[in-house]
Length: 257
Image (cartoon, rainbow, N blue to C red; front, side, top):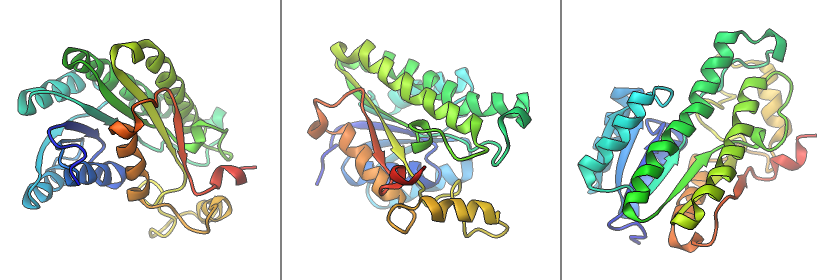
């Protein structure tokens, strides 16, 4: 299938995990894809692999917490491919884990908010400007189930940032829906990735127990499963969907309490 033939998609945090899986699926469906990430080597490799398989891709190094980087990222997308139809704001960090709110440092708090929340806002700011010039588009922001319900103990910065992404998504959807831009969010549950990997060497036993307790289908999700939902939200099949938060957690949200 070529659902996105002739379309241009921008994916942040696309050097690995969900971002990489989403970029690859866009390419498989015919889109020209911009891979944006801080890690040049990994991001370039993803782009090269897509090209080797017959797709069109371009890597842009960008730190989404930096306004100048984000503006350049979107401008380079348009310079390279002529337009921007779909944007997936996926870049994010976990921040301090298992740290009570009052013990989080100001620097830790600012870093998480800078990437996870400010970064999404900066990306949307420039993506929307470009999409308005094109007559519309679709944006998907990556939130989390921890942005829908308070998280387990010790994740205050991350959870707060993702609640913010949900609110920003809904507010922006109201602002721009009548101008042809659909804005939605996905809220993944525990998904196998660099950020959530209970089997990596040295992983805290408490973190392993947390994942096991909240695994609604007795397993971690796969990045490709969330990527499928993201592509649907960007597609014409979701033409009347905007301002929604799609939970993709295998039922984990039912077990958070």
